[in-house]
Image (cartoon, rainbow, N blue to C red; front, side, top):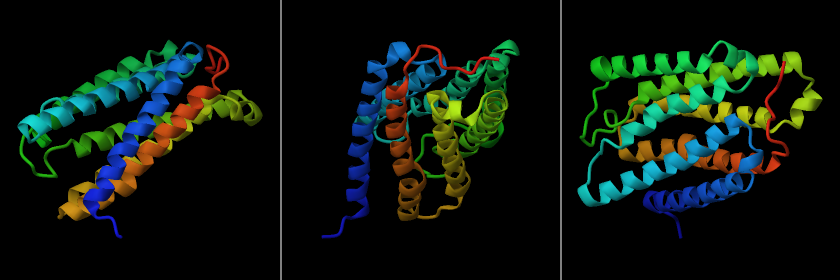
Length: 230
């Protein structure tokens, strides 16, 4: 018996819930040991799960797009700002997080006012901030590469292999990279079937696998502060 697209959507829906619960459970178990960037990721997963639950409930009752979903888009900027501001000491010294937050807010305003106003219709190309999400993904990947450069410069690879923060950055960087590919591709989708297939292959399944891997990394933390010191 072949599964239909709706069947696969249901499978991914429940798989997402299971891996999210597992990752959050691992985060709670290791919370006191996590470095601040890892705690940012933990809270990002938790807040995103809560927001998605609210959106699902509102859509069941009222149908259509709700304003709550737009909180997810800007929350990505907040996560990026906090995560990288505390990754390595030199970022904290220049207060990198503040610049990321201001740049993200400015881009959000420009994008909302001139390019993608908030809408409440069912148009696949208008009910999400694809350009804004692409901006977030590019920013995250670029900052990840810079962070990895400083880590390799100041620490041997042998040490980095045992550093959970290093592994976490790699996972998040590849995840955001796939999100970027998804975001720049989705505006060209013309049918619901294509939209769902693309979402499954570039967003839903990779995102769930990355969340599961993140939960495993939470369990690897063995001391409170794992950030690279200079």
